[in-house]
Length: 396
Image (cartoon, rainbow, N blue to C red):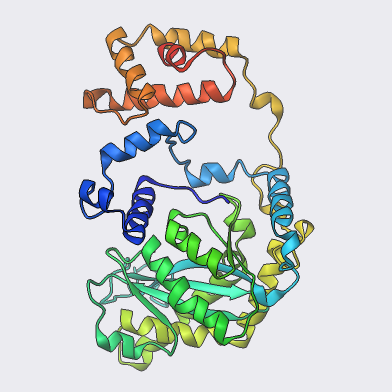
């Protein structure tokens, strides 16, 4: 469904599985019920269809999104959900995403004498920010959000200051994690659906970040008729409703409130504990409802119509076949040159490491060379060059 899995995500899911299934033999094997490096590499060795891959840089990857790819994604989603009678009900179609709010927003225009620098001092660092997760449906309504704080233990004063039903969470670094997202769905979002009497099934479109899907969350959603659908990777600037039409106006209003706060409170800065109450004022603004509805229309998520997507945001409309196809002879010729530059003993170690599907544990000075050769081998396999993996790595 488009959700990538990291090593951390996989091991956390296995840990939850062991704890929920009461697997005594595994508990005796793993520290704190969590599998380690040896189990992880054994898992990859047993399941050779699951190789490790490096993620692409987002801006570069966005350039590979084409109109054809987006249309194919809409077609696949419609086939999956068509028989569930959910895409025609705006109350049951949601978009979720998190964003940060800086306590000292940048970019304010100031008045001052010509030829002199003008400064706006703040007690808060320009990097201080608070992450908040929002959920909206195609009818233009907000579900209770979740604001995350970097605390070991949340102060009671902060909880009291938050609006009713507003989600308050804590993580080690203040960012979204699989555990915090699970807590939000189970303790905030699902009760909201029941209280609002929104019928099931419910569909949630969200980006495919690894924190958005874990094994225990997948089971909970299946049992409670909540369907998570990952948006097409690297296309959230086109298909993410909140990014397209909601977060921009919301942050403009946030900046004005921060300025007004300082003016009306004799320069006193807004604090992290004030964030939920301030954001609650923003999301009840009447124009926010229309922004949400416009965002769903512009992304084609409701009405679910691929022709409503703004394809002008695509960097490259199509990828010419001539620029993406290389013959195996060309690849062989280039790699033969590289082969002569690498020590044969080192090549043997590279081949053995890849065959075991392990991370490089040899000379650290050769780490980058190993990653480079492995990447070339993956690309050669992708282009269909004949020969086994050992031969390909030797060429690399």
